[in-house]
Amino acid sequence: MAWLAAAPRIGARSRPDLWPGWARAHGMEARALAPTLELDNTVLAIQAAIQGLGVLVVPEAFVAAMAGHGTLQRIHSASIGTGAYAFAAGRQRASPRVELFTRWLVQRGGP
Image (cartoon, rainbow, N blue to C red):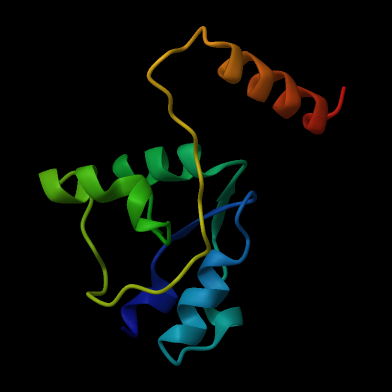
């Protein structure tokens, strides 16, 4: 994996922990694998990788379909834990429960 130190590395400012975590998990020096291109969020970072601007460390759930179709390729076969994600999905968009939950989320999000 020596080539990785010379490769353009894409990072997302919203997830600065991904490259250092990946490097540590694979016995590499985290400073040597700092992103060379940083974008504001994961979506932009994924798009940059699709456009061929470099390699990216990203939660697999975000790109599983793209990897399955060959749009993106894995640089290493081993996966590492990157955190937990949760989302809510309901069958009825306009239900009182959904409206109550949405109001609560807006209130928690601030102004």
